[in-house]
Amino acid sequence: MMRKAKRQSSNEFQRRQLVSAHHYERLDNILASNELERVDVPPYGDCFFAAVLTSITGMNPEQTATNSLRSKVCKHLNEKKNHYKIEGINDNYENDIDSLKTPGHWDCEIADSIPLVMANMTGRPLRIFSSDVNIPILDVHPDIVDVPTLEKKKPIYLEKEKPIYLAYLKVPNEEHYDAVQPKKGIQCTALDKELYTKLTELEVQKQKLETDRKKKEDLLLETAEMESSTPRKRVKHDHTVPTTPKSTKCGY
Image 1 (cartoon, one colour):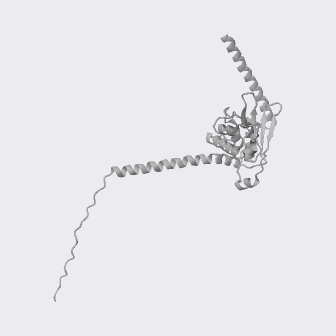
Image 2 (cartoon, rainbow, N blue to C red):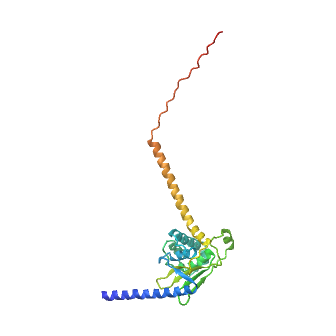
Image 3 (cartoon, rainbow, N blue to C red):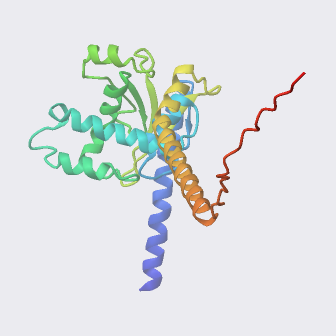
């Protein structure tokens, strides 16, 4: 019985490997026909955010940048609740957002809306190349028009003519996003690099402020300890009143 179970488990594992390999081959062929190539992103719950950052910056993102992008998505979902929440479909909207705030978490209904959220946040369309035979290429366009806000904030990553490319492996229970780059190498614009910098700027500033605060506290504590341990020297005061010499009259 145990041998049979192990054999079945091994066969299932091999079958899934073959399915994944077939999907990857199909996906890579689609990308190659568009003079693009896939950039591997670690298969974990942050793969979508990491793939977006890698695709638009050409750099592997730090975890702080990935977490920052996730937080911005959750904030946007809260602010635009009336736009994304559909009664009777995603009734767990608020709970899903709370779950989505956790790094590495993705398995929730609202995750299907995140590509559209990213398009609306950046003002740029997403072009998703998929291993799905029925939908090999999916274009996701922004559907929120908020020109005054965009003009006011002037987002550095606003390039309406430039889509964000992603690769989507659609294998049941093994769905995964990878980044995409031009086949001849990554051509990263100054705006893209600035976006990456801005995404980590807040976290870096917070860390610096916290470090400076601790240094000041340590310095004040050290100064206080030195003053308490060093005895004060008593100052000797000379209370003697100086006398003025008497004048001597000289007679001629």
